[in-house]
Structure formats: structure tokens, C-alpha cells
Length: 92
Image 1 (cartoon, rainbow, N blue to C red):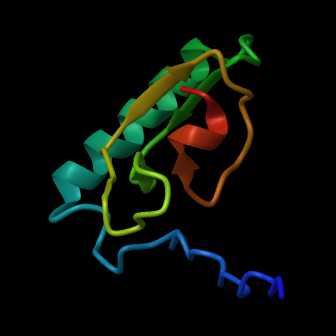
Image 2 (cartoon, rainbow, N blue to C red):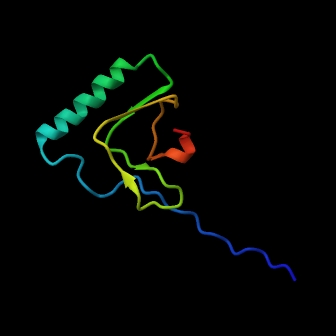
């Protein structure tokens, strides 16, 4: 007799690691300046995504493996808001 496969619970990929964005005011200012300057520079490019302090997941199925760069730029993806960034969903 063939039995159906058991249901697999979806894997949660948090949008926050619970850590503060910056350790001090100077770091926070530099992060915000970098994101703002790059966003303005690429404002006419709908295929460029600029963000920072956003969790990037690079191993599907393993939400414990992530990084959260202060500032980053991705070319070739839609410029839209995201709760986190999953490399395998974005294709880059």
C-alpha cells in the first residue's frame, strides 16, 4: 500500500536577528549615508536593489546560515522592499 508522504513544515527565514543595526551613532550614520547615497545614484535603475542591515540567506533549507551586511547592492533584480533576501529565490 502506498502511503502519502508526511507534510513538511515550511522553513522560517526570520527578517531580524534581534541585534542592533549599529554599535554607535557614527556607524549608524555611515550605514544610512551609504544606503541613501547608493539609492540616489541608482534611482533610475529598476533592476538595481540597494539595501543594508537586511538578512541575506544563501543556503536554502538552512536559516541559521545568513549574513547582514551594513550596505549592499544587487544588480539584475527588481528594486522592491523585502523582509529578507534569499539568493535562491532572487537568482543572484
